[in-house]
Image (cartoon, rainbow, N blue to C red; front, side, top):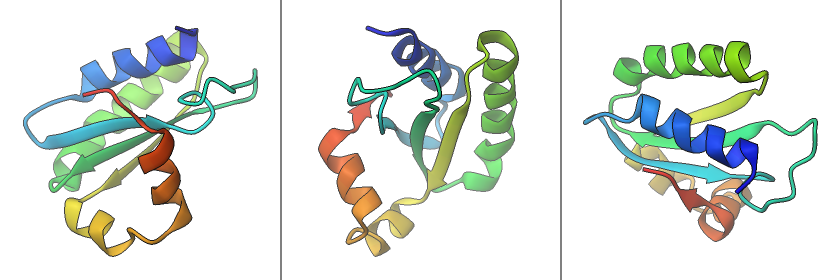
Length: 101
C-alpha cells in the first residue's frame, strides 16, 4: 500500500461518523497510478453535508500541514448521486473506487 493510500484511510477514519454513509477513494491513488503531483480524491456520501463539512475541512487542513499532501473531498447526498448517476465522474468512481468506510 502506498503512502497516499494510507493517508486516505487515516483521513476516512478521522472524519467518519454517524452522518456519513460511505467514504470512497477514487482517481489515480485508487488506481495506483499516482505521481508526485497527484492529490487524493475522496467521495463522501452523506445526507448531512452542512454538519460534516467543517470536520472535513479541518482534516484536509491537517493532512496538508502534517503530510504535505492535498485531499480533494467531494460531499454528495444519496439523492444527488442518484440524479447524476449518468455522469462519467460517477461511472469512474463506481468502476475504480475503493470503499474506505
